[in-house]
Image (cartoon, rainbow, N blue to C red; front, side, top):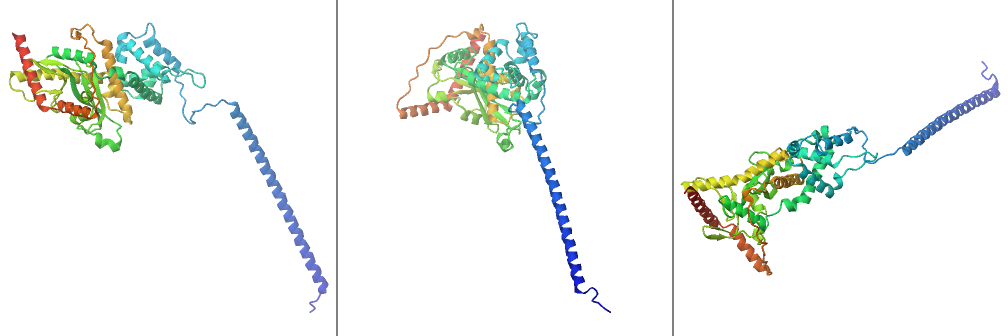
Length: 455
């Protein structure tokens, strides 16, 4: 067989032809790849151009729109029609001829219209939050009357902030903020006048009234009440839990015959008793420092220079506190116990009236911040005193008294002398023997008045 057909030349030709075909295939394949790359690049370029046009259109729209800060995307905007609600509120209660009479205003706002407007004007002047302003769209915002009416609904009825929306058309968060700002403003504006310590004229009037009631030297009644704290922080729950097992905050108060609250100390945990609260309060601070107005009175020929408060049995036996007798024996002691417990009910009545006027301090407190609770309680006490002043019967016979001269207090210059005098007054306040002697003198005084009246 001849295997050399075509010879070497034929083999060389076949090899060269096959290599040229492979090169052509690679070239075609390369050209196809380049064409594919060009097509992809063109597509990407078109997409980028489209995206740029969309972004330019969106930016132009944003520039043409008027945006306002404070908007939160996703929040539902409710058109409450607050302008008509403001007009209805004004027509119902504050117009020249309101729809509801004065008696219904007094029942719903817990005070007369003139006193309410006085508080409103003072608070609005103190804090411009209660001045009506326009929003970013030029619409009138909530009026001061709307905000303050919502506050009084929460204070007087103890309702939740959201419940004020149906009539007043105010949001829950705005109502809560109005309550906080209103109570803070009332405290800052009126505390010096309506929650002050008695001055010389006040002491003279209280001594005159105490004498007519059978207790010369009495300045008022002392007791404590608890306010349940529903939203007390869990870490504080054990500290604030009292006898009821629920967290409470204690209010210590001194009240006179017409339920005026002269002293209010609020904030101690409910686990304390009345003695702890008395030790922590500033009730006898001015007396111990020697700057309290003088209280001079005479019982059965014996002169005294310190007034006293009626208290219940838990309080310590101090010369400035007069307690009842737990188990009175004999007509004299029974008469004293009956008179003392009757006059001491002034403070219990004051707590009841305060809670009935402002139901928020009767129900459980729903705020977390203790400072907010302090402002609410203090504001309610201040407005309680303002209502008493506004509705007090100035023609009552018991108001007949003479003004006392302004006392002149001499303060020692020497620090050592001042300190020794402070210690002496402090020991005199907590003198147990003086307490027993004063109570025995009052027992004899009341019995003598009783027998003379019978004769």
